[in-house]
Length: 287
Length: 101
Image: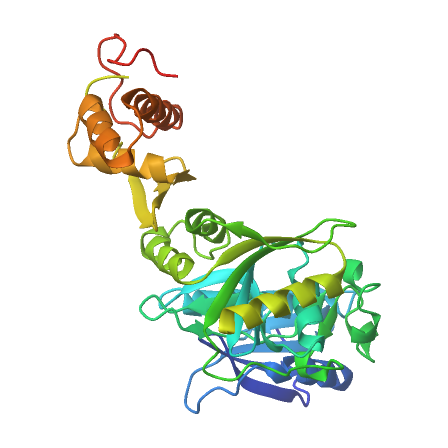
């Protein structure tokens, strides 16, 4: 790939779970958008070798490069490489962490000195729910992945920008970024910029106090339904990155987590009801 | 089911409180055993026959032998249906309390 050398804005290096990532962006508006969106990620320690992403414009179109190799060339939709960047960043973050830790596909947020883990597959509303929690004062941990240390069950956060798909927009209109047109199919929301935000969770992340499998059911009144520890392991295993390659390591980790933390299902309709339910549950768990 | 059925190798089992979760590496399936299922699995793994497992659980549970026998046979039928037993059942013949309920 031959690309013109132009001035790029460099973002990072950030720590994305155990991955170190750096982003070079040619377009100033996209750079500003990403700088805000990525602001929750911790700064990487000096000396670490980053995965380098670049968003450029060449004759063939808009390009995403990863470590100087093109991974996407898009002739028309200039925003698409930015969307792909986030996808690759998630993948690099998870892959860098799997050798060390169990990585759950989960949202998470902290309140009252404890963290609620919300494992769930894609498209089940976990980003919506965690946005509701953060704007109610919870601290943001992640809307995508959380690492669980196999020895200590300590959590590692991944405070990437919250990705809100169009289905969430009517529920959370206030979360719309001012420059939402930069990425027209998804809002990338910096948790600390939400009104009422509890900010990004501190390090170390408060310990897990609840595991909640939330699911949207139109019109349902939010209620917690206790899960047995075994049922919780079954559900969390379905949300483990790296499965089945990590099953031998991760099953005992999930078992210890489920034995030490109560687990529930949360059928939910309205967002505010679910937030209030989780806040009360975390406060009870902390008492 | 009579004889000494055994759990099939190739399944990762982990105890979770009084339950068990298994991951069948060949089939790529997860399984959850209830507390009764986990207790039966423990006894099978320790080499007990079905009758011996029923005896032991009857003594420990305070239930009648018939109740325990039905519960154990239900567990064995579920394990067999899920492909989690190593051996096919032994020669036919109802257990001491009658056929599995």
